[in-house]
Image: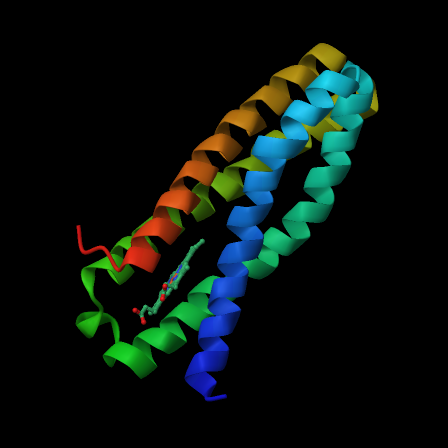
Length: 154
Ligand code: HEM
């Protein structure tokens, strides 16, 4: 295994963990909790889910640009030689990072405070905002992976 193929594997694993985790949360866990849990239990569960999942998102958020920039050097001789789909990848990464940081810094503390105060309406409001941002980030992530895999220079 070369250093480049090892870096590539780390990069794809980072993408898999982040985008796959969001897909599972949005498409599977969200409808399952809506149909089985009442408000307080649901909010408490989501708080714990985000706390654990976001540790892994932080790993992916750091791993992706580090491995990506290493591949930029080894494969394309730096930023200037990067094909258009890699430049799109970097742009979408920044958008995904901004949405993730927004949830981590603003909405998650709101949800945590609402749950600790047992203020369920405020908790439902905070969770609704997280759901929308996470759904949008999932769409960005899926588009990014499709563009990268197709090497689509759009
Ligand atoms: C600063 C951020 C990033 C940089 C510099 C970067 C850079 C790169 C580079 C150089 C490649 C190799 C392209 C090739 O050899 O044709 C690559 C592949 C890939 N990247 Fe990124 N990337 C970044 C962020 C992301 C993100 C956020 C995701 C998904 C969440 C992602 C998903 C992928 C995937 C799935 C591939 C494999 C494409 C394939 O060969 O089929 N990247 N990236």
